[in-house]
Amino acid sequence: MANWKLIGGIAGGLIVVGAIGNAVNGDGTNTAAPTPSYATTASATPTPAVADDKPDKVEAETKTVPQFVGMGLQSAQDTAQAAGFYGLKSHDSLGRARHQILDRDWKVCSQNVRANSSASTDKVLDFGAVKLEETCPAHDETAPSAASGTMPSFTGKSVAAARDALAPGTSLTVEDTSGQDRFILIESNWKVCSQEPAAGTKVTGQPVTLNAVKFEEECV
Image (cartoon, rainbow, N blue to C red; front, side):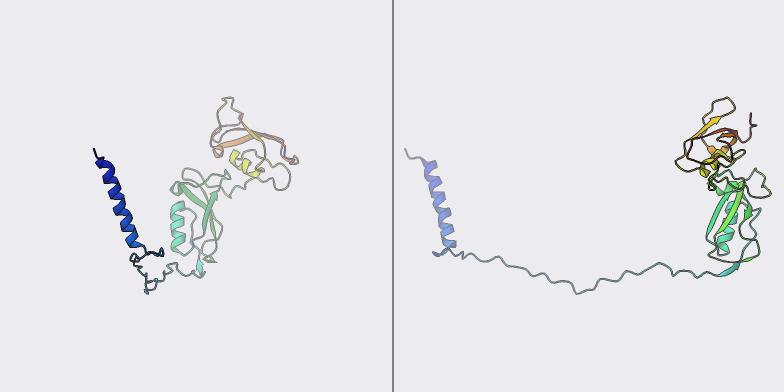
């Protein structure tokens, strides 16, 4: 009996070979129709230029400095900007190195440029401030500094101000001198009662120890 599966496979193979032969000349050259190529033409439309929306630099002017003392810190800042002064900063008038995070909770005690005087609008205005419930000092408290090479007196100063006065690498230990062994979290809320080394000691990178209580408490 004839194997029809085998015969069918051979016949199919011959058909394929015949088709290939028709597509190729005797010299091996492919005579199949070439695939058409499509040329891509670049758009002649130019890319629009991007406009520079940055305003020209505002030239400094000479203007009258308002009276800021007695204002809330936020109101003082708004008034300064309305008058053309945009370089603004503030500091803690009590020298406790507190940051004025919520300006509406602070009031202005001092300003670095005298009220009603003339100043260039590129002058930076610095406001000394205290919390609303606090009393302004007669003069801004100066922060301690170890720049002279001797240990400053930290007594009565905030732990935060003392830390700022020391070199960043100083080994500093702060202890609660009340005996309650409390954790000193917000250093600007604690005042120094005593220190080691003593004020006037030459600064040689030695460790520093501060004994402190909260500002509303008495040193013991």
